[in-house]
Image 1 (cartoon, rainbow, N blue to C red):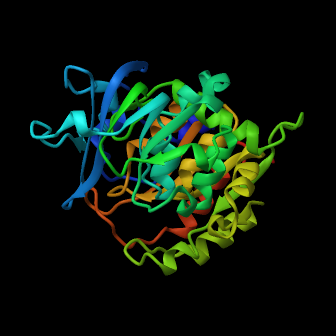
Image 2: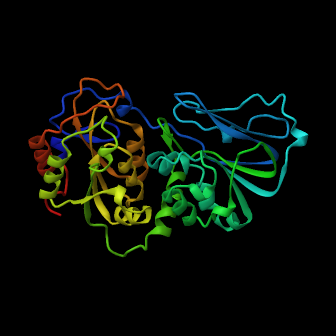
Image 3: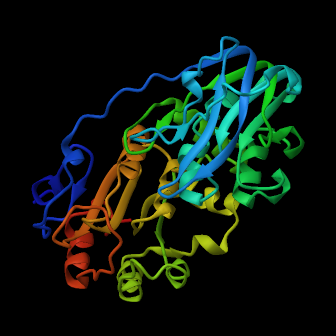
Length: 355
């Protein structure tokens, strides 16, 4: 019996035959197309950013000379996240004017999973126009006093593109930019992804990992052992699960204990990446094309992001699902059936037992 005969499928992924629960409707929908490009705006008005309430709305805006909002600057997911404030009373003539070429990189949400997806979604411009980087100032909204306070994964990413922290300017005040490049997003969480996002991930991978002539062969399980000490809202029987993966020859990796560069190096060498649902699994973005990804998850905590990453990377995406009785997004504690997981690895996930 072949894997195709055993595993069940949706538009985006395969999943364990033992699962009999519901799946979110998006699992069998088509992936929308998003247009990616940039706009160069002379004498652009850039307004300072702010957080507003919960769920968080972001107050920010980029406007052209006629004070029309620049559409490319809007921060979106499956819905609009950023909103401009009222600028009708703004004394524009009194604002400081920044000379030279500026590039708008938008909001840096430095939470790891959001950063390596949506926060870097305008950086495809850096990959495409790398020769212009050294002459630019990069404008960023971030909840930090200084770029020097950025987490290391943010600093290492900027360094991979050849951007020094001295070139980053936090948008703490309203300003006029003599010339502002505004790239649009190449990934829109909860909606879609463009192949432009590959340029960003590949640039990071190329700079942080010395490419090997050998084909990736590692089998890696990403543990939440240390993360679960901080987050008790979606605990599971992780120790038992780790033991199963060890029996099938997987290395157990704890991402929180590694630098960003060390993590990228591991993912670049990995052929099969497995782990519980969460930000760590977004690191599949740094794997080679046609690799295999396995995510353990309750059906109440499935997101489009992992499916979109695998789609654009041409990965073989598998889920081992636990039924919570609902597909409504919520954090729950859950328990993986160890016998069913072992059977899944032995019979349904291709190439595990013969690697």
